Length: 175
Image (cartoon, rainbow, N blue to C red; front, side, top):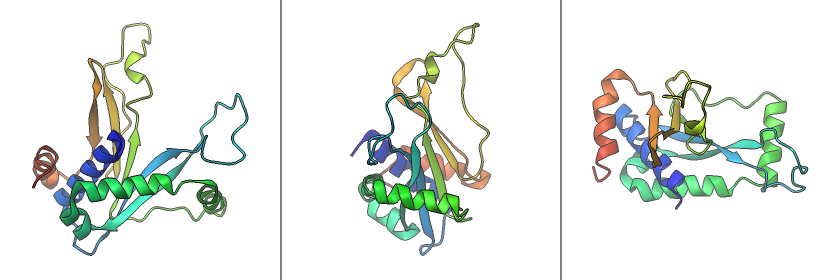
């Protein structure tokens, strides 16, 4: 598994366990997948715009908790692998018909910003200290750390009552 697949699965599982969803609650992990090399014909040479669709891993709260990080990582990996011509066209149709709307409960949206080079940007007064959007209850960012190029900062919103449990589950994956 890639580092993204494992970290995303670990964050997803810890988030779900900390919130304490009912065992039969359907959970989704949504993330962007670059489609530049996944569609035929490919994008034209020199195209610099965005080229992504959302991938979605899905399971029940019970399965995600009981089957562990390897199971979650596999779900993320398979969700990435499903993104191809057919998936991209289905997503385009849903967006065109305005039917693409995430479920109101049990959805965590992960965005990996750790490889965008944000930690290298200098706006004239030195490098940025922090980069990140306003958080909402279902959004998670993987951000770069300025002084630790192989580390990632995970920024995720959890309800106040779940913060201690989230930190516990993130630090102790065997629980």
